Length: 139
Image (cartoon, rainbow, N blue to C red):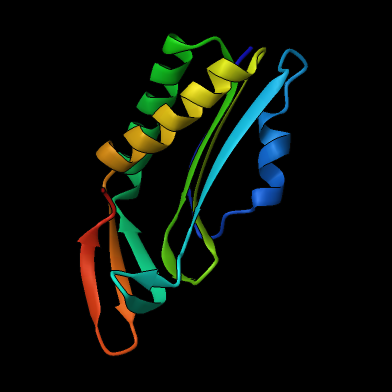
């Protein structure tokens, strides 16, 4: 049976991700964690703030997880994105996949983060020392 965790959370607990992806049939577990970086376009970042339309975001995260299960032989998938204000070095997004072999979980993990960034309705405010700017959380 496949495990699937799709959540919008206040705080990401990266320590729990391994346990959520662990599966007796998985020889490979791949995780990507996105965090707040200190500089954007040579400007010092104080924090980021994320907002989302939660019910729509959860539905889209669920669709992305199902697409990953259809494309690869995965045993577990995690997609989590944080909302609210986050300081430099704080995790804001985590995706992961586990499978029998490493190639599937590496490919799936890349698909999960790229597709999340393309399709999930999440908005980001970049807070700098002297200004703040709302931008799409999409690349």
